[in-house]
Image (cartoon, rainbow over all chains, first blue to last red; front, side):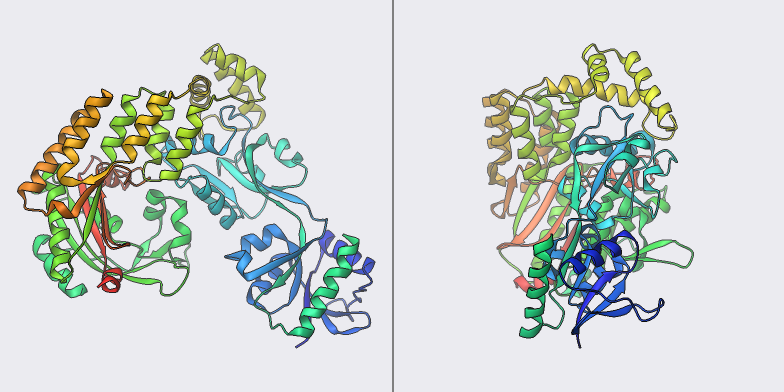
Length: 232
Length: 361
């Protein structure tokens, strides 16, 4: 088995990853044909590149079927249980920045903090006959964060797109979502809670602890890390 | 060991109930909250109905009791035993539980004491000695908080956190500092300071319109405005050191049950608070425990023992051998209404962790 690095297969994350590898002197070659998802680093027959979707990369890192991967910290922490025991965040790559935040309707003038949200959640059912609903695709991050703040009585409504529209569509009361500038949140008349930033995420070079490692592969990992460090 | 326990439990709690392994997940998530989701096994049918592997027996038994009302006798005592399924960090996810639920008995003291007695004799049947039982009381803590005459929302928050010592202490800590409302919303702050409810309602309504929020879909402008005014008042509230001290001293109380009534009485005398009805019930229960022949030397009253789940309403029970908690229980008079009962149904029960009991033996 070669040393395998998983790289995002499309979009800005892909372009930026290819860019940073190239700057570090690690030229990822074009795939032989457009439908292929495997390639190499030029001149390095010992390193295999696998193009995968960003969340798939997190799963492959968790299972140990790739040695390293480039993906967002948000996806890694959302996808992988007990994240830090399963993978190691080797390097922040300086792109793909986005915060995972808790946001509530701007009209909730009385809710500024997680403690306020706790108060509101506590008697929601007694007042409105149902639990407070949070729309998100980040189940795990939401559960951990709300748990840390002692909030247990709420329900998650799964949302796979346009989460910030959920309160206006009355499918949820508040959201946990990703934002880079906050403009989408504001445009939807929502506001981020003062202590509502769950995670300041960006693209990371991540190593899988469960992959098959030996001295040679650890050396490759260190080499890639030091080359990329110079340009990040 | 499960058979031994069940044989005894069925004698003292003869009402039969059959609980399926596959349960609808919603009642568990609605009562215990979203937090439970990561600790149970969830599965979805082809039609999108979400089920879970039975994580405990209390909720299904209460659901059964609510769904099959016996008007001739609203009282029932159910025994149960079997496997429950919980996600565990390491090792197995299957655990053996046995216990009982006493539902519908309006004499709470009688039901509490019977429950304690049944727990104690059940454990004794398995040949286990040296079981220590700690008791807590949700109502007594509520009375102590009430005596401090705190702003309502602060009092509610404290009571809600009862059973999570770190959360309670963090609140006491925060309340003794001078609070500041940092709202950044000058208009709302001004209106709230002036106590202008109508002005706030208009202000919120405008914001809801701007955000295309349906005014009727969730929190109403009225509810938001009212809470804003409460919050402004609270922010000017500071807990005096005497009150903070009283709370902390109460929560630190951990005394042999035989001495608990006396300790509580002197605490009341010294601090000038009255335990009222909750105190009366506590003292009656303590006397009834003694009369029932419970070995009070193995029972302690631990004031901080509670559960921060809204349906717990009275006594809290925790049985342990050394450091291992082998059984737990308590009173949850609000559970059946949460599960759809039209009227409140008194409920008390306990659950024995058979695996831990075997380990401890």
